[in-house]
Image 1 (spheres, one colour):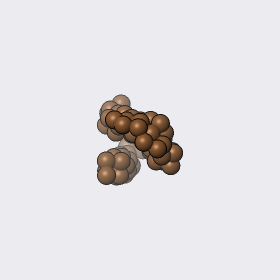
Image 2 (cartoon, one colour):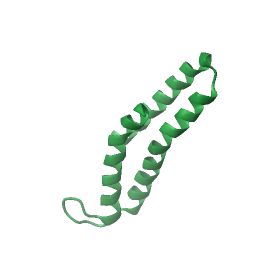
Image 3 (cartoon, helix red, strand yellow):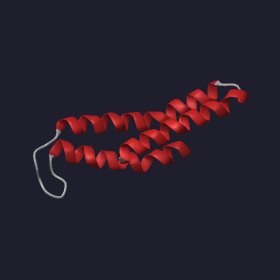
Image 4 (tube, one colour):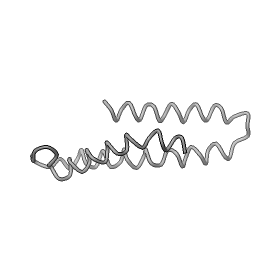
Length: 86
């Protein structure tokens, strides 16, 4: 649940930007940018899948390797959030 809470705000921001990209209207209306909307939608799907994949990966491992997988999942989440923000 903590990982889902970490990705909730970036998913919300990506959703708002995706809707604005598909419609072309945010503060003012311009030409829609379908490519950016599709890219942001893919980012949303990846960010929403990370908590599920992380939970399944950690649940299947023995306790000795859970720490390494947890650190790797955290690194992937941080990199995805940085790419989304930049």
